[in-house]
Length: 221
Image (tube, rainbow, N blue to C red; front, side, top):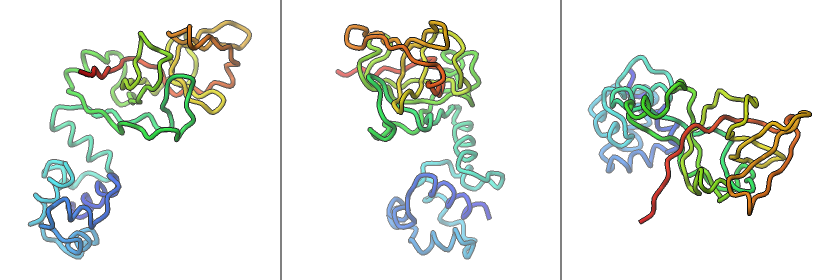
């Protein structure tokens, strides 16, 4: 039965316990009932509506027999809504002088946008290759702002041409422009060059996680 399997898959992907899921249903579904359903000890589907609402997915997705992973559930969910979901660029985040991984908790794990918006704004990049990160710091002021959600082409793992990349250098993550200067070196350039002067680095020491292609800016009122 798909219900118990899918409930367990998406519950674990969201990092919530059976007891907390029960709480999210308003205790309409007990922790014991959830446990039995996930163990296939119960074939009852009378809880399906409450569980779908608590897990934040359509009932049709929760009952779909074809899915085998949380990612497939998310893809079915967003496809039905006419939305595309872009997940976090794992192991990369930060902007400014650079952050060590784990310095800050990530603000988002994924961003969901309409398919129409994605087709207009993120052209020429397969949607499956796009990831998002949160930019932090002031080094790219005028291009990106602190707190921007940055869309990244995760296919790009090597320096291709002068452009803005997400990369790790000496253990710190940066979102800055890389300019090739010859002899196997690149210049790390900030938009805010007064506070963040250029730095020359050996290209072999730069681990590229992707190329920045767009950003959303949060405007405070």
